[in-house]
Image (cartoon, rainbow, N blue to C red; front, side):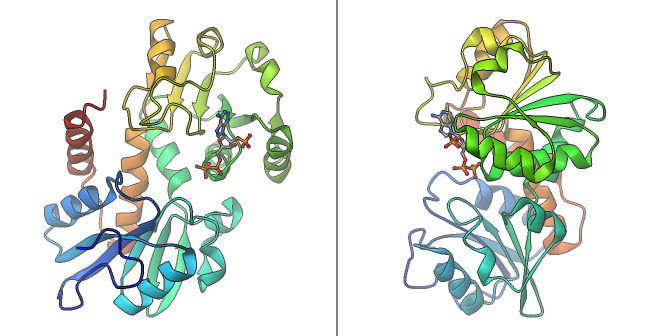
Length: 285
Ligand code: ATR
């Protein structure tokens, strides 16, 4: 498989299996091929999932159609720019304004977003969402998915972001509060969720918040899953907070993709195990 294909197809045409792929740039760190291929194998499905690095969203859709894929994952930086090339959007993807999943329904390309449901499916394992207040750090696509899904699940999101205008736009879109970064330490909330990339591999020494601020929240979650324990989580844990990495959310968003593509119940345990094994092997903790 050619991981860095830009002008040719990234999966062999002669492959008889149902084909799926992830489109993004860069893709060298992506664990989606590992996770989905393990899920297909576990369920006895003759399918293959490849990695197609492309220059832009138009190229991604062109390759999708040419290869006759049944479905795809869409990752950074194409989650928004892919939208004009799709035939139809699911309501959640439309509201969030970002697509991370494509399903090929008889040649019509349908856009979905499973990031939000991935988050709330994972959070439910950890705490009751309904009635809780969540500080959402960041105001990009990941934050929009979080705000959407938390509202759906009966939670109360409060947006905090470096750029105030972006926080205002997100809060206005969903009718929730936003608070300036300087006031985050005065907030009373149950859970903090970091949606920014600050602290992600390879910049593992960075943190989006000073340790004394993170310590204000009983629960602290990071959407980052590489490393498994970010500096934010290490400091929050040392201060006595309950912490959760982004691994579970990553697996759950993938599980929801699997459900959309196959109509089958995803083998979540198997998906979780292969992802954790790889992250630990890479020295992810
Ligand atoms: P995604 O789709 O993954 O959410 P994004 O749309 O680029 O990615 O959004 C990233 C978010 O992380 C933004 O809200 C960004 O803040 P700004 O709106 O101020 O740009 C936030 N972010 C990125 N780097 C940051 C940093 N060093 N400190 C604080 N926030 C940061």
